[in-house]
Length: 188
Image 1 (cartoon, rainbow, N blue to C red):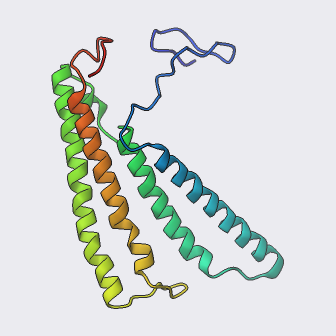
Image 2: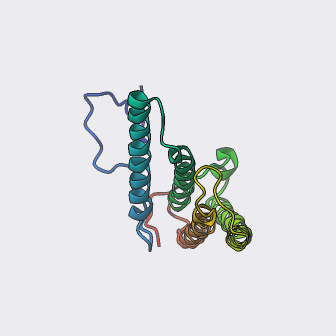
């Protein structure tokens, strides 16, 4: 049976606590951008897949473009969700190291992690710009439906930059976090 932070047991009849611990901390750029982009991409994926299934069922053929476009949307969804995870500080980490030690050590590790994520995605964004330029310059077309490949690849540097900026924002927020935050004190 799940427990609350105070150790009380929760069941289906238990009232919800006044403050839920999973609320997002304030950010300069609203997190609703990633949330609504995720909703739109998932809705589009569901509609495309449903239409393809219906067409296959009734006609024994399928839309040729759905596979290629669905793969693109799933990659875009992963990038948008990655941006939201970084902004919410929900990225993968080893809790033994990240949550252990003094508050100053945890703050430094959180800042280091955010900085490394920013560096990684700035590198990915910079290198992917070259790929987009090559796709455009050599007039590469997609293998399935023959549209210009850069229509798909241009989103990689855009999303990488968004993730890097979210990581830099997290770095700044973790730098402002006061050392009394663990003891229940206010944050700066």
